[in-house]
Length: 154
Image (cartoon, one colour):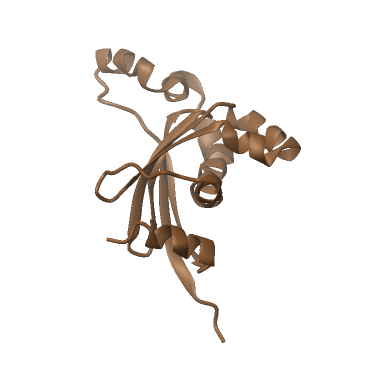
């Protein structure tokens, strides 16, 4: 018997290198937008997670909204769900050689520091700069995931 799955589609856009990211994630028909702020830079977060995954999770500020734009309250289990989906994409994006290469030079300086330096870019004639990534995959329909999604049923 084939295991039931749910289709996950997620995208991420870098706001500030290693610390702030935003995007969207959908689990079949359930759609959410998110903004993640890491209290510890991503290159130090994995070290912290090896010592204490709970402490690492507590350094992440989650701002998640449902399809209607209402804030989603995340308990510890829900935060783990978001880290296992969106957090994984953010880490893969952050660690990719293309992302690391894009962080070099003038453009990289703008990308690393985020919105506070966008004014400088506008003065030079740029309207904005962003880089990002997206992914799709199937996830087993585990009870915790389904319970979370059902609480946000349309």
